[in-house]
Length: 472
Ligand code: BG6
Image (tube, rainbow, N blue to C red):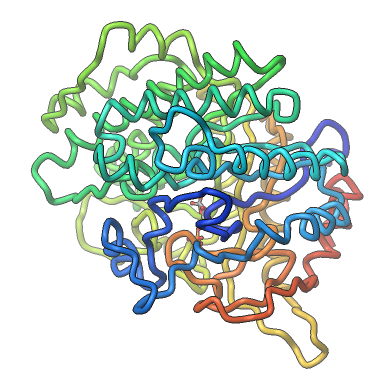
């Protein structure tokens, strides 16, 4: 089997809104995510756009795990595990608190200077997502999120500022976190609510998508101009959808559903809207407002690599009955596979399949920048967290991506999600934990915020030290 100790990024991934907390500190103003409460999906996202009511609700991103004040301690622990890379994001609303200011917020910029310096001190490469499910609330409300073309200008300015400031520290950038998720999670992905049953759902969504694609292409262009040796990756939610049966109608359904996700990577990796999009747009009354120069911009500014998250697979059927599963992207159950406590289908083989598909399609490097098991962890009587279930899950997925590499796929690295426990994106819970490091804080923000190593901490350290050969 491959020895992945060389030229392979081993580390973990977090995001600003799920880890930092300090939501109004040093000049920051609320982002879209700061208006979300925790709780079941519908409840959590229904709070979007409503006045923040601190007497009535707990807003998990406000404190999160207080990475803003604990980052030195956390990075030291990541170093102890042997990380040579850490993926995190910049909170846009720390740099431009309202989103439309003329000048950036110096204190916000300084925080990331300090953070990146701390990583570099330990030889940890910062892999930076420009925006991970948060947008300055002011511009999101004023312009209605990415359905407005005005957003492109704000984003472009933000990118220019961060590229210029961090060009010597950050070389690997990702534009939008899971850009394809904006079609099913509008608030997170596109800073706007989208209602599937509203008559203009498709038109609004795909126009917003176009604006984001244009903004991403502009970011790539700026990155090349400003950051010497800079690399820009797209980031998609890895969503592999199987046909529920070998009935050709199910197969067709699966192809169509997969194309909803590929549409984004096809544009960002190949530089043009794919042929199949024409019929899809026509049949769903989508009329994209393409401005002069947009298509050329997309063509000339494709991404250098494809980063993706991978948690679960789904199935598609031409028959509308059957159980639905998952709490973010909703799909059908798969009778061959088990589910996590949160109903996410666990499918290591799906990772190998997806990687093969993506690589066959684009022949460009892939980067697995999220993967993991959200589970409830208990502190045992010995004061430790024995998370063998997490080790098992990760082991099977590492084996799967190593097989994909044997199949010929080029993979830049592996950054498991929530390498330190953080707030769940879909539910806002702390109890849905992914980390190698436990953080003592509960779903209501109570706790000491103390960091405790889980069993998986030592296991992952051994995996990294052995270049991925010792998975026991
Ligand atoms: C990805 C997101 O979709 O899934 C992360 O990029 C998120 O932000 C992760 O946290 C896991 O989802 P959840 O809902 O379990 O936190």
